[in-house]
Image (tube, rainbow, N blue to C red; front, side, top):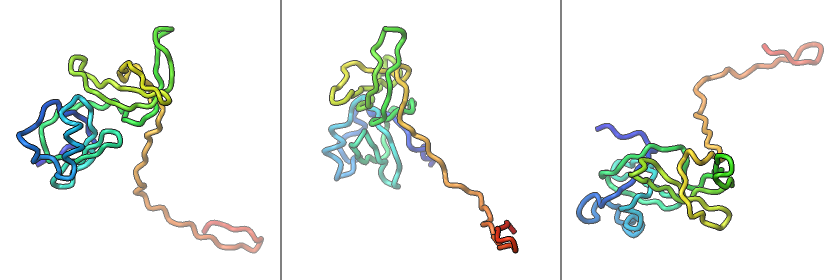
Length: 161
């Protein structure tokens, strides 16, 4: 069986199966508050039995189950974003993402923002936001470089051998 490349994003719009047997027993109270809903969940890894999901600081585990995969815009909960506008049409400000929702009639993720301690009532699409959080990650190097060997010279300076 081929496992999906993780992390990936999606939502569980309907209860996936009868009962709660697909939820890790320790995570039932948390998972039942998060699903079913239009919240966009981040599926981070698979431990062989359960997928590990995250929605902001909320984490829970589910056995493999049906869900609606959603294309990521590269924006996650907790990221700093700046709203973009056209002329004077929209107020420009910097905020933090605190909610992600898939709106099927629009076919995209809409983001809920928090500005200081105030929740912004309007939802924003990715094309109305500019990501300010640095998400650069470098993989470990795979080239072996020889360590330089130094030797002293008669003039008291060092030369590379």
